Amino acid sequence: MLKAGRGRVATVIAAVAGLLAAGAPGAMALTGSGGTPGQWSMAGQNIDDTHFQAAEHEISPANVGRLAPRWTLTTAGAISTTPTVDDGAVYVPDYGGKLWAVAAGSGRVLWSRDISGYTGVPGDQSRTSPAVYRDELILGDGWILSPNTTGAKVFAVDRHTGGLVWSTQVDTDPASMITGSPVIYGGVAYIGISSKGEGTTADSFRGAVIALDAATGRLLWKAYMVPSNNGGSDSNQPGYYSGNAVWESSFAVDLRRGLLYVDTGNNYSVPAGVCTTPEQTGCTSPATDDYVDSIVALELSDGSVAWADHTLNGDLWTLPQPVGPDFDFGAGPNLFTTANPVTGRPEQLLGAGQTGRSTPLPARSSGRPRSARRATAASAASSTARPPTGGASTRPRVTPPRSPTPWAAPGRTPGRPSPAAPGPPWTRPPARSCGRHPTRKAPSTSPSSAPPTASSTADRWPPPAPTCTPWTPRPGRSCGASPAAAR
Picture: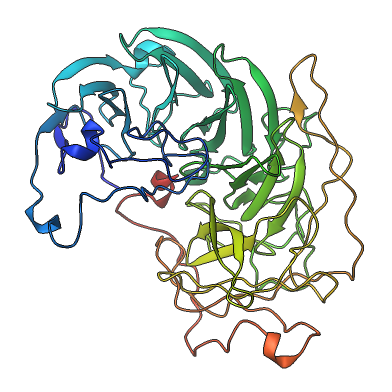
Protein backbone atom coordinates (compact mmCIF):
# COMPACT_ATOMS: atom_id res chain seq x y z
CA MET A 1 0.00 0.00 0.00
CA LEU A 2 1.14 3.55 -0.71
CA LYS A 3 1.83 5.52 2.43
CA ALA A 4 0.10 8.86 2.59
CA GLY A 5 0.72 11.78 4.85
CA ARG A 6 -1.13 15.02 5.31
CA GLY A 7 -0.09 17.69 2.88
CA ARG A 8 1.46 15.26 0.42
CA VAL A 9 0.43 15.53 -3.19
CA ALA A 10 0.48 12.52 -5.46
CA THR A 11 -0.28 11.97 -9.14
CA VAL A 12 -2.08 8.69 -8.87
CA ILE A 13 -4.60 8.26 -11.66
CA ALA A 14 -3.58 7.43 -15.20
CA ALA A 15 -6.10 6.59 -17.92
CA VAL A 16 -3.53 4.46 -19.70
CA ALA A 17 -5.91 3.18 -22.31
CA GLY A 18 -8.40 5.98 -22.55
CA LEU A 19 -10.98 3.58 -23.92
CA LEU A 20 -11.20 1.78 -20.57
CA ALA A 21 -12.12 4.82 -18.52
CA ALA A 22 -14.29 6.30 -21.24
CA GLY A 23 -16.39 3.17 -21.55
CA ALA A 24 -15.57 2.61 -25.22
CA PRO A 25 -17.20 -0.36 -26.97
CA GLY A 26 -15.70 -3.57 -25.67
CA ALA A 27 -14.37 -1.99 -22.48
CA MET A 28 -15.63 -2.79 -19.01
CA ALA A 29 -18.29 -5.18 -20.19
CA LEU A 30 -20.55 -7.39 -18.14
CA THR A 31 -18.69 -10.48 -16.89
CA GLY A 32 -20.70 -11.38 -13.81
CA SER A 33 -24.22 -11.07 -12.46
CA GLY A 34 -25.40 -7.52 -11.95
CA GLY A 35 -22.70 -5.62 -13.85
CA THR A 36 -23.41 -3.07 -16.58
CA PRO A 37 -21.65 -3.10 -19.97
CA GLY A 38 -19.37 -0.09 -20.44
CA GLN A 39 -19.31 0.76 -16.73
CA TRP A 40 -17.47 -0.21 -13.54
CA SER A 41 -19.97 0.73 -10.85
CA MET A 42 -18.48 -1.16 -7.90
CA ALA A 43 -15.08 -2.41 -6.76
CA GLY A 44 -15.44 -5.92 -8.18
CA GLN A 45 -17.26 -4.72 -11.35
CA ASN A 46 -20.19 -7.09 -10.70
CA ILE A 47 -21.86 -8.96 -7.86
CA ASP A 48 -19.77 -12.08 -8.55
CA ASP A 49 -16.77 -9.90 -7.60
CA THR A 50 -14.77 -11.14 -10.61
CA HIS A 51 -12.78 -7.91 -11.21
CA PHE A 52 -12.69 -9.09 -14.80
CA GLN A 53 -13.78 -7.97 -18.27
CA ALA A 54 -14.33 -10.98 -20.50
CA ALA A 55 -15.64 -8.77 -23.31
CA GLU A 56 -12.54 -6.59 -23.53
CA HIS A 57 -11.05 -7.31 -26.96
CA GLU A 58 -9.42 -4.04 -27.99
CA ILE A 59 -6.31 -4.54 -25.83
CA SER A 60 -4.20 -7.56 -26.77
CA PRO A 61 -0.62 -8.84 -26.46
CA ALA A 62 -0.03 -7.33 -29.89
CA ASN A 63 -0.83 -3.74 -28.88
CA VAL A 64 -0.44 -3.53 -25.11
CA GLY A 65 3.11 -2.20 -25.48
CA ARG A 66 1.77 0.87 -27.29
CA LEU A 67 -0.52 1.98 -24.46
CA ALA A 68 0.25 5.46 -23.16
CA PRO A 69 -1.37 7.81 -20.63
CA ARG A 70 -4.25 9.86 -21.95
CA TRP A 71 -4.40 12.06 -18.87
CA THR A 72 -3.30 12.21 -15.24
CA LEU A 73 -4.84 13.79 -12.17
CA THR A 74 -2.90 15.26 -9.26
CA THR A 75 -4.82 14.49 -6.08
CA ALA A 76 -4.43 15.54 -2.45
CA GLY A 77 -2.92 12.21 -1.44
CA ALA A 78 -2.21 8.63 -2.47
CA ILE A 79 -4.96 6.27 -3.61
CA SER A 80 -5.31 2.66 -2.47
CA THR A 81 -8.71 1.78 -3.92
CA THR A 82 -10.19 0.93 -7.32
CA PRO A 83 -11.82 3.94 -9.00
CA THR A 84 -15.38 3.37 -10.14
CA VAL A 85 -16.70 4.49 -13.53
CA ASP A 86 -20.25 5.37 -14.49
CA ASP A 87 -21.83 7.47 -17.23
CA GLY A 88 -18.59 9.08 -18.33
CA ALA A 89 -17.27 9.93 -14.85
CA VAL A 90 -14.57 8.43 -12.62
CA TYR A 91 -15.08 8.49 -8.84
CA VAL A 92 -12.33 7.91 -6.27
CA PRO A 93 -11.26 9.05 -2.75
CA ASP A 94 -7.66 9.75 -1.71
CA TYR A 95 -5.57 9.74 1.45
CA GLY A 96 -5.61 13.51 1.50
CA GLY A 97 -9.24 13.24 2.62
CA LYS A 98 -10.82 14.17 -0.73
CA LEU A 99 -13.51 12.55 -2.88
CA TRP A 100 -13.11 13.23 -6.61
CA ALA A 101 -15.39 13.15 -9.64
CA VAL A 102 -13.43 13.37 -12.90
CA ALA A 103 -14.46 13.30 -16.57
CA ALA A 104 -13.39 9.90 -17.87
CA GLY A 105 -12.49 11.12 -21.32
CA SER A 106 -10.39 14.14 -20.40
CA GLY A 107 -9.48 14.00 -16.70
CA ARG A 108 -11.23 17.30 -16.08
CA VAL A 109 -12.29 17.67 -12.44
CA LEU A 110 -16.08 17.76 -12.18
CA TRP A 111 -16.08 18.30 -8.43
CA SER A 112 -14.15 17.37 -5.27
CA ARG A 113 -15.23 17.40 -1.64
CA ASP A 114 -13.69 16.80 1.79
CA ILE A 115 -14.70 13.50 3.43
CA SER A 116 -14.77 15.35 6.77
CA GLY A 117 -17.58 17.51 5.39
CA TYR A 118 -19.73 14.40 5.05
CA THR A 119 -18.87 12.75 8.37
CA GLY A 120 -18.17 15.71 10.65
CA VAL A 121 -14.86 14.11 11.70
CA PRO A 122 -11.86 16.46 11.28
CA GLY A 123 -9.20 14.93 9.02
CA ASP A 124 -11.44 11.99 8.08
CA GLN A 125 -10.64 9.89 5.02
CA SER A 126 -12.08 7.09 2.92
CA ARG A 127 -10.25 4.16 1.31
CA THR A 128 -13.27 2.46 -0.29
CA SER A 129 -14.41 2.35 -3.92
CA PRO A 130 -17.60 4.42 -4.16
CA ALA A 131 -20.42 2.11 -5.29
CA VAL A 132 -22.81 3.69 -7.77
CA TYR A 133 -26.52 3.37 -7.05
CA ARG A 134 -28.81 5.42 -9.28
CA ASP A 135 -27.68 9.03 -8.68
CA GLU A 136 -25.75 8.17 -5.51
CA LEU A 137 -22.22 7.18 -4.56
CA ILE A 138 -22.06 5.02 -1.42
CA LEU A 139 -18.82 4.68 0.57
CA GLY A 140 -17.48 4.42 4.12
CA ASP A 141 -15.02 6.33 6.28
CA GLY A 142 -11.96 5.65 8.40
CA TRP A 143 -8.22 5.10 8.16
CA ILE A 144 -5.61 3.52 10.38
CA LEU A 145 -4.15 6.76 11.79
CA SER A 146 -7.43 8.60 12.26
CA PRO A 147 -7.94 10.11 15.73
CA ASN A 148 -11.66 9.44 15.37
CA THR A 149 -13.15 7.43 18.25
CA THR A 150 -16.83 7.90 17.40
CA GLY A 151 -17.17 4.74 15.30
CA ALA A 152 -17.69 3.91 11.63
CA LYS A 153 -19.99 5.66 9.16
CA VAL A 154 -21.38 4.83 5.72
CA PHE A 155 -22.71 7.70 3.63
CA ALA A 156 -24.12 8.50 0.20
CA VAL A 157 -23.49 11.59 -1.93
CA ASP A 158 -25.07 12.93 -5.11
CA ARG A 159 -22.74 11.77 -7.87
CA HIS A 160 -23.53 14.79 -10.02
CA THR A 161 -22.90 17.50 -7.43
CA GLY A 162 -21.08 15.84 -4.52
CA GLY A 163 -23.77 16.91 -2.04
CA LEU A 164 -24.54 14.69 0.95
CA VAL A 165 -27.65 12.51 0.56
CA TRP A 166 -27.56 10.47 3.78
CA SER A 167 -25.12 9.32 6.48
CA THR A 168 -25.52 6.36 8.85
CA GLN A 169 -23.53 5.46 11.96
CA VAL A 170 -23.05 1.73 11.45
CA ASP A 171 -20.81 0.87 14.42
CA THR A 172 -20.04 2.52 17.75
CA ASP A 173 -16.83 0.76 18.78
CA PRO A 174 -14.11 3.42 19.07
CA ALA A 175 -11.75 1.46 16.79
CA SER A 176 -14.27 0.64 14.04
CA MET A 177 -13.85 1.86 10.47
CA ILE A 178 -14.76 0.90 6.91
CA THR A 179 -12.03 -0.48 4.65
CA GLY A 180 -14.02 -2.68 2.23
CA SER A 181 -16.16 -1.40 -0.61
CA PRO A 182 -19.96 -1.69 -0.79
CA VAL A 183 -21.66 -4.25 -3.00
CA ILE A 184 -25.15 -3.24 -4.12
CA TYR A 185 -27.95 -5.47 -5.35
CA GLY A 186 -31.72 -5.07 -5.27
CA GLY A 187 -31.55 -1.67 -3.59
CA VAL A 188 -29.46 -3.02 -0.68
CA ALA A 189 -25.83 -2.08 0.06
CA TYR A 190 -23.73 -4.77 1.77
CA ILE A 191 -20.49 -3.77 3.49
CA GLY A 192 -18.08 -5.05 6.14
CA ILE A 193 -16.87 -3.35 9.31
CA SER A 194 -13.17 -3.33 10.07
CA SER A 195 -11.03 -1.89 12.85
CA LYS A 196 -7.76 -0.17 13.66
CA GLY A 197 -7.66 -2.07 16.96
CA GLU A 198 -5.08 -4.54 15.69
CA GLY A 199 -2.43 -1.91 16.25
CA THR A 200 -3.40 -1.33 19.90
CA THR A 201 -4.14 -3.22 23.09
CA ALA A 202 -7.90 -2.69 22.67
CA ASP A 203 -9.88 -5.93 22.86
CA SER A 204 -13.50 -4.86 22.43
CA PHE A 205 -14.12 -4.70 18.64
CA ARG A 206 -16.52 -7.15 16.98
CA GLY A 207 -16.14 -7.60 13.22
CA ALA A 208 -19.48 -7.43 11.42
CA VAL A 209 -21.34 -7.28 8.11
CA ILE A 210 -24.23 -4.87 7.54
CA ALA A 211 -27.02 -4.40 5.02
CA LEU A 212 -28.34 -0.89 4.36
CA ASP A 213 -31.24 0.45 2.33
CA ALA A 214 -29.28 2.05 -0.51
CA ALA A 215 -31.82 4.84 -0.98
CA THR A 216 -32.12 5.95 2.65
CA GLY A 217 -29.18 4.44 4.58
CA ARG A 218 -31.53 2.63 6.97
CA LEU A 219 -29.87 -0.33 8.69
CA LEU A 220 -31.65 -3.55 7.66
CA TRP A 221 -29.55 -6.11 9.50
CA LYS A 222 -26.16 -6.61 11.12
CA ALA A 223 -24.33 -9.94 11.48
CA TYR A 224 -21.41 -10.16 13.91
CA MET A 225 -18.34 -12.34 13.37
CA VAL A 226 -17.52 -12.49 17.09
CA PRO A 227 -19.78 -13.68 19.96
CA SER A 228 -20.87 -11.18 22.58
CA ASN A 229 -20.37 -10.93 26.34
CA ASN A 230 -21.95 -7.49 26.48
CA GLY A 231 -25.62 -7.83 25.60
CA GLY A 232 -25.09 -7.96 21.84
CA SER A 233 -23.60 -4.46 21.57
CA ASP A 234 -20.90 -3.41 19.11
CA SER A 235 -18.17 -3.71 21.78
CA ASN A 236 -17.29 -6.61 24.08
CA GLN A 237 -16.07 -6.46 27.66
CA PRO A 238 -12.33 -7.17 28.19
CA GLY A 239 -11.07 -10.74 28.41
CA TYR A 240 -13.38 -12.17 25.74
CA TYR A 241 -13.33 -12.65 21.97
CA SER A 242 -12.62 -9.64 19.78
CA GLY A 243 -11.39 -8.90 16.27
CA ASN A 244 -12.34 -10.88 13.13
CA ALA A 245 -12.47 -7.68 11.11
CA VAL A 246 -14.27 -7.82 7.78
CA TRP A 247 -11.75 -5.73 5.91
CA GLU A 248 -11.55 -7.38 2.49
CA SER A 249 -12.05 -5.53 -0.80
CA SER A 250 -15.69 -6.52 -1.52
CA PHE A 251 -18.23 -9.35 -1.28
CA ALA A 252 -19.81 -11.80 -3.73
CA VAL A 253 -23.59 -12.15 -4.06
CA ASP A 254 -25.00 -15.58 -5.01
CA LEU A 255 -28.49 -14.98 -6.39
CA ARG A 256 -29.11 -18.67 -7.11
CA ARG A 257 -28.73 -19.58 -3.44
CA GLY A 258 -29.70 -16.27 -1.87
CA LEU A 259 -26.34 -15.91 -0.12
CA LEU A 260 -23.73 -13.25 0.55
CA TYR A 261 -20.15 -14.57 0.73
CA VAL A 262 -17.71 -12.78 3.07
CA ASP A 263 -14.42 -13.63 4.75
CA THR A 264 -12.81 -12.49 7.96
CA GLY A 265 -9.60 -11.63 9.81
CA ASN A 266 -7.86 -12.81 12.96
CA ASN A 267 -8.81 -12.47 16.60
CA TYR A 268 -7.43 -9.58 18.69
CA SER A 269 -8.21 -11.41 21.93
CA VAL A 270 -9.75 -14.68 23.14
CA PRO A 271 -10.78 -15.95 26.58
CA ALA A 272 -8.13 -17.58 28.73
CA GLY A 273 -7.48 -21.16 27.67
CA VAL A 274 -8.69 -20.74 24.08
CA CYS A 275 -6.22 -21.61 21.32
CA THR A 276 -4.29 -18.62 19.98
CA THR A 277 -2.26 -20.43 17.29
CA PRO A 278 -2.92 -23.46 15.08
CA GLU A 279 0.05 -25.26 16.63
CA GLN A 280 -1.08 -24.83 20.23
CA THR A 281 -2.05 -27.96 22.18
CA GLY A 282 -3.84 -28.43 25.47
CA CYS A 283 -6.21 -25.56 24.69
CA THR A 284 -9.88 -25.14 23.87
CA SER A 285 -10.96 -24.56 20.27
CA PRO A 286 -12.58 -21.17 19.59
CA ALA A 287 -16.36 -20.94 19.91
CA THR A 288 -18.27 -21.96 16.78
CA ASP A 289 -19.58 -18.41 16.38
CA ASP A 290 -16.07 -16.94 16.63
CA TYR A 291 -15.54 -16.76 12.87
CA VAL A 292 -11.77 -16.29 12.95
CA ASP A 293 -10.05 -16.53 9.53
CA SER A 294 -13.29 -17.88 8.05
CA ILE A 295 -15.29 -17.97 4.85
CA VAL A 296 -18.89 -17.23 5.80
CA ALA A 297 -22.12 -17.49 3.80
CA LEU A 298 -24.88 -15.16 5.06
CA GLU A 299 -28.53 -15.17 4.07
CA LEU A 300 -29.23 -12.10 1.95
CA SER A 301 -32.60 -11.66 3.61
CA ASP A 302 -31.56 -11.29 7.24
CA GLY A 303 -27.83 -11.93 7.69
CA SER A 304 -28.16 -15.28 9.45
CA VAL A 305 -25.25 -17.67 8.89
CA ALA A 306 -26.04 -20.41 6.36
CA TRP A 307 -22.62 -22.05 6.68
CA ALA A 308 -19.05 -21.19 7.58
CA ASP A 309 -15.64 -22.71 7.05
CA HIS A 310 -13.07 -22.02 9.75
CA THR A 311 -9.64 -22.35 8.16
CA LEU A 312 -7.57 -22.28 11.36
CA ASN A 313 -7.99 -23.48 14.92
CA GLY A 314 -6.62 -20.23 16.32
CA ASP A 315 -5.05 -16.99 15.14
CA LEU A 316 -4.56 -14.23 17.70
CA TRP A 317 -2.46 -11.40 16.30
CA THR A 318 -1.98 -7.73 17.18
CA LEU A 319 1.07 -5.50 17.07
CA PRO A 320 1.51 -5.65 20.86
CA GLN A 321 0.81 -9.42 20.87
CA PRO A 322 1.95 -11.06 17.57
CA VAL A 323 1.21 -14.64 18.62
CA GLY A 324 -0.62 -16.30 15.72
CA PRO A 325 0.34 -16.56 12.04
CA ASP A 326 -1.87 -13.59 10.99
CA PHE A 327 -3.45 -15.63 8.18
CA ASP A 328 -6.55 -13.49 7.78
CA PHE A 329 -8.45 -12.98 4.53
CA GLY A 330 -7.65 -9.72 2.77
CA ALA A 331 -9.17 -10.43 -0.64
CA GLY A 332 -12.94 -10.72 -0.95
CA PRO A 333 -14.57 -13.94 -2.21
CA ASN A 334 -14.98 -14.46 -5.95
CA LEU A 335 -17.79 -16.51 -7.51
CA PHE A 336 -16.81 -18.11 -10.82
CA THR A 337 -17.52 -21.08 -13.05
CA THR A 338 -14.96 -23.57 -14.34
CA ALA A 339 -14.93 -27.09 -15.77
CA ASN A 340 -14.84 -29.98 -13.34
CA PRO A 341 -11.57 -31.83 -14.10
CA VAL A 342 -13.26 -35.21 -13.59
CA THR A 343 -16.62 -34.81 -15.32
CA GLY A 344 -15.81 -31.93 -17.66
CA ARG A 345 -19.08 -30.27 -16.67
CA PRO A 346 -19.37 -26.64 -15.58
CA GLU A 347 -18.95 -26.21 -11.83
CA GLN A 348 -19.44 -23.04 -9.82
CA LEU A 349 -16.68 -22.34 -7.32
CA LEU A 350 -16.16 -19.81 -4.58
CA GLY A 351 -12.59 -18.57 -4.30
CA ALA A 352 -11.12 -16.67 -1.36
CA GLY A 353 -7.60 -15.26 -1.11
CA GLN A 354 -6.04 -15.82 2.29
CA THR A 355 -2.61 -14.67 3.41
CA GLY A 356 -0.31 -17.31 1.97
CA ARG A 357 -2.90 -19.45 0.20
CA SER A 358 -6.01 -19.63 -1.96
CA THR A 359 -9.11 -21.49 -0.83
CA PRO A 360 -11.51 -22.68 -3.57
CA LEU A 361 -14.83 -24.21 -2.47
CA PRO A 362 -17.74 -25.67 -4.42
CA ALA A 363 -20.55 -23.11 -4.17
CA ARG A 364 -23.34 -24.52 -2.01
CA SER A 365 -26.43 -23.54 -0.08
CA SER A 366 -25.63 -25.40 3.14
CA GLY A 367 -24.11 -28.56 4.55
CA ARG A 368 -20.88 -30.16 3.42
CA PRO A 369 -19.55 -29.56 -0.08
CA ARG A 370 -21.13 -31.83 -2.68
CA SER A 371 -17.91 -32.95 -4.35
CA ALA A 372 -14.24 -33.32 -3.63
CA ARG A 373 -11.59 -31.72 -5.74
CA ARG A 374 -8.14 -30.24 -5.44
CA ALA A 375 -7.76 -26.85 -7.08
CA THR A 376 -4.71 -24.65 -6.88
CA ALA A 377 -4.59 -21.05 -8.07
CA ALA A 378 -1.59 -20.16 -10.21
CA SER A 379 -0.22 -17.78 -7.60
CA ALA A 380 -1.31 -19.73 -4.54
CA ALA A 381 1.11 -21.33 -2.16
CA SER A 382 -1.39 -24.06 -1.31
CA SER A 383 -5.00 -25.10 -1.66
CA THR A 384 -7.80 -26.47 0.46
CA ALA A 385 -9.62 -29.59 -0.69
CA ARG A 386 -12.97 -30.79 0.52
CA PRO A 387 -14.13 -34.39 1.08
CA PRO A 388 -17.31 -35.70 -0.57
CA THR A 389 -20.58 -35.78 1.32
CA GLY A 390 -20.63 -38.60 3.82
CA GLY A 391 -16.84 -38.95 3.96
CA ALA A 392 -14.55 -38.13 6.82
CA SER A 393 -14.32 -34.36 7.11
CA THR A 394 -11.31 -32.42 8.32
CA ARG A 395 -13.03 -29.05 7.97
CA PRO A 396 -16.12 -27.96 9.88
CA ARG A 397 -19.49 -27.23 8.44
CA VAL A 398 -20.55 -24.78 11.12
CA THR A 399 -24.16 -24.38 12.09
CA PRO A 400 -24.40 -21.25 14.23
CA PRO A 401 -25.95 -21.51 17.69
CA ARG A 402 -29.59 -20.64 18.12
CA SER A 403 -28.64 -17.68 20.28
CA PRO A 404 -27.53 -15.02 19.77
CA THR A 405 -28.90 -14.31 16.31
CA PRO A 406 -27.87 -11.48 13.97
CA TRP A 407 -29.21 -8.09 14.90
CA ALA A 408 -32.19 -6.96 12.85
CA ALA A 409 -33.72 -3.52 12.49
CA PRO A 410 -37.10 -2.95 14.11
CA GLY A 411 -39.85 -4.69 12.19
CA ARG A 412 -37.49 -7.34 10.76
CA THR A 413 -37.01 -10.78 12.26
CA PRO A 414 -33.69 -12.56 11.77
CA GLY A 415 -34.06 -15.96 10.12
CA ARG A 416 -32.72 -19.22 11.43
CA PRO A 417 -30.23 -21.46 9.65
CA SER A 418 -31.06 -25.07 9.00
CA PRO A 419 -29.73 -27.74 11.35
CA ALA A 420 -26.41 -29.29 10.47
CA ALA A 421 -26.44 -32.20 8.07
CA PRO A 422 -25.72 -35.52 9.80
CA GLY A 423 -22.19 -36.85 9.54
CA PRO A 424 -19.15 -37.88 11.54
CA PRO A 425 -17.60 -35.41 13.96
CA TRP A 426 -14.88 -33.22 12.56
CA THR A 427 -11.52 -32.25 13.95
CA ARG A 428 -9.72 -29.08 13.10
CA PRO A 429 -6.55 -29.49 11.03
CA PRO A 430 -3.15 -29.37 12.75
CA ALA A 431 -0.83 -26.41 12.39
CA ARG A 432 0.77 -25.24 9.20
CA SER A 433 4.33 -26.49 9.26
CA CYS A 434 5.98 -23.25 8.30
CA GLY A 435 5.52 -19.92 6.62
CA ARG A 436 6.65 -16.35 6.34
CA HIS A 437 6.91 -14.12 9.37
CA PRO A 438 3.35 -13.02 10.29
CA THR A 439 4.12 -9.33 10.01
CA ARG A 440 4.71 -9.72 6.28
CA LYS A 441 1.57 -10.07 4.17
CA ALA A 442 3.19 -12.40 1.65
CA PRO A 443 2.49 -15.98 0.49
CA SER A 444 4.00 -18.70 2.63
CA THR A 445 6.02 -21.50 1.11
CA SER A 446 4.06 -24.44 2.43
CA PRO A 447 0.60 -25.85 1.93
CA SER A 448 -1.79 -26.22 4.81
CA SER A 449 -1.69 -29.60 6.42
CA ALA A 450 -4.55 -31.86 7.35
CA PRO A 451 -4.90 -35.58 8.07
CA PRO A 452 -5.96 -37.75 5.13
CA THR A 453 -9.59 -38.72 4.84
CA ALA A 454 -10.87 -42.25 5.28
CA SER A 455 -11.28 -42.60 1.52
CA SER A 456 -8.77 -44.18 -0.87
CA THR A 457 -5.19 -43.01 -0.94
CA ALA A 458 -5.82 -41.37 -4.31
CA ASP A 459 -8.10 -38.86 -2.58
CA ARG A 460 -5.59 -37.86 0.07
CA TRP A 461 -4.65 -34.21 0.34
CA PRO A 462 -2.63 -32.09 0.50
CA PRO A 463 0.57 -33.47 -1.07
CA PRO A 464 3.57 -33.87 1.25
CA ALA A 465 4.75 -30.51 2.55
CA PRO A 466 8.23 -29.29 1.63
CA THR A 467 10.86 -29.16 4.33
CA CYS A 468 11.24 -25.73 5.82
CA THR A 469 11.91 -23.96 9.08
CA PRO A 470 8.92 -22.87 11.18
CA TRP A 471 8.76 -19.18 12.00
CA THR A 472 8.68 -17.83 15.51
CA PRO A 473 7.02 -14.49 16.31
CA ARG A 474 9.35 -11.58 16.79
CA PRO A 475 8.97 -9.40 19.89
CA GLY A 476 7.91 -6.39 17.83
CA ARG A 477 8.68 -3.99 15.01
CA SER A 478 10.94 -1.01 15.66
CA CYS A 479 10.12 0.90 12.49
CA GLY A 480 8.28 0.80 9.18
CA ALA A 481 4.63 0.80 8.27
CA SER A 482 2.30 -1.03 10.58
CA PRO A 483 0.76 -4.14 9.00
CA ALA A 484 -2.49 -3.03 10.58
CA ALA A 485 -2.46 -0.20 8.02
CA ALA A 486 -3.49 -2.74 5.46
CA ARG A 487 -6.71 -3.34 7.34
